[in-house]
Length: 116
Length: 112
Image 1 (cartoon, rainbow over the protein chains, first blue to last red):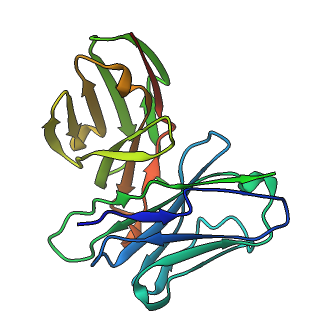
Image 2 (image 1 turned 90 degrees about the vertical axis):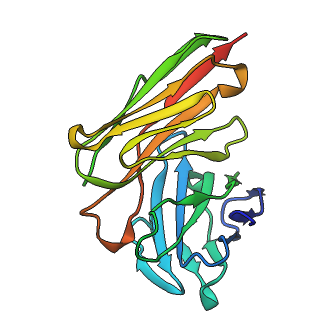
């Protein structure tokens, strides 16, 4: 079974440009999460999808960030326009959503975003 | 919201030594996971352990949910164990999201 995959692995963009990150969860996982670690700080929650619906987006820092999960499969996270403080590693995670299963979240390898 | 504290913040070991990392949390949890962030920045799942004890090779973990702490044991450490170890929890009062709250991590350096 394939794990969570993320693309690209690394992105370098200039301030003011747009970047789109992609996450493919484990097949059959309804829950999809985005997290990020910026400036060497702790990893923080951004938002949570259940299938195609946003369950919780309380961690999104501002309206320059837009997440979508069309069709309830893969998800994209767009940053527009990017600022220097957006540099960091963006992680995606997925988990099952069935009674009796564990709450374990499986993380992807992350996308390292560098804004210059 | 729930607070997560990890100790020690930094740890330097000689290869072959054993270590214990601690994670304290402030509320009841339905998820507790330990991760290793390798030098390439990838998060590697180590344990899903909201309660009880698990072992995987040289690593083991114990969570005492009633006392709100978890321990990660590394035995016979190797240089490849170096990196940051994170504890992350989801509060039972966090609603349907089950979002993980991460500690600040323990930076481990294993010297040859």
